[in-house]
Amino acid sequence: MDRPILTAWIDLGFPCSSFLFTHPFLRLFDPRVDIVQAEWSPFKKTPWLKPLLVDLSPWRAKLQEIEKSLDNQTEVVFIADFPGLHLENFVSEDLGNTSLHLLKGEVAVEIVNKQMNHTLQEGDRIQLPAGEYHKVFTVSQEPSCYMYIYVNTTEAALEQNFTRLQVLREKVKNGSETEPLPPELQPILDGSLENVSQTDPVVEAFLQRERRMEELQKRRNATLVERFNRFTNKKYFIFRRSLLMTWISLRNLVLGRPSLDQLAQEVAYANMQYDVDSTLSSEDTSPKEPERSDL
Image 1 (cartoon, helix red, strand yellow):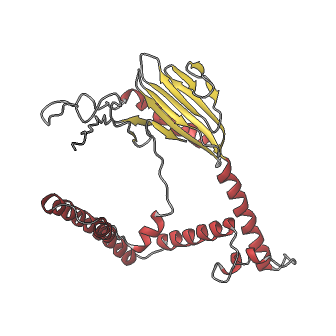
Image 2 (tube, helix red, strand yellow; image 1 turned 90 degrees about the horizontal axis):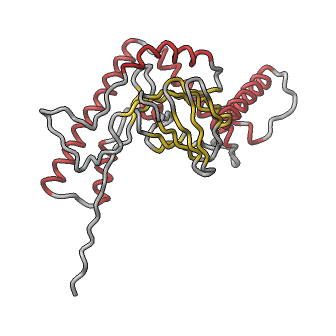
Image 3 (cartoon, one colour; image 1 turned 60 degrees about the horizontal axis):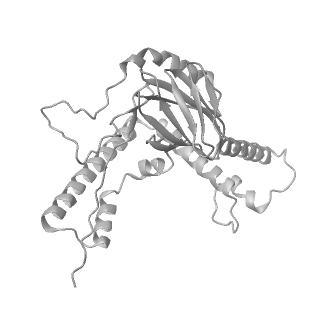
């Protein structure tokens, strides 16, 4: 019995953006172009690569001034977009008091669920609801530049809890706290969770941050020999991973892909990193700004 052959056409686009120094987030590729079928030649100019918005270069000082004027709990993200394009974004429920401020150009903001449209001119702002998607269309003839200002309420509450634990630990150490600590708070004194049956997530996060801060302070106070040793180890593992991943790729092209278990073991071995750097990098996060992104 003949089986029908199913074919699928795939359109591949890159709604990528980049942050260059003090520039806003900028698009790298035209998201309307199917990269699979797009023409490309090393001897011709690539039409679907977006140019750098040099017109926004004078805004660098302005953007830095705005960032410095905000308090520690308020975050800001600058975005620039081209005429005719739009950005779809989702405001996380953890972010309170999120607003969009238009700095240059003209945009139309659509609240997707409520099907509401708002047109903003230079200097206008709009409050965005949390937990919902919205779209920002650049309707002016020139590129637009706008910024999101928001407060991470979850992070702010966590920082307040960290401060309370820090103050409580200092009171216990200097004897001003007379009440005994409950079992779930005992780890803040010895910095260990080994003998605790019930772990408080806030206490666990507090201890992880303390260890991370101690490690960073240790790295800052490292001698020249220790810094050189860490530098050479880091570069060694970078080149080691590049060579191993290249070898795995070439082997797969020539001999075919092995079993998934073997491939997973090989990739895990290639991704082995220097202990200090892997510990610190596991704690870090980087912002992403795709076509549909989350604030």
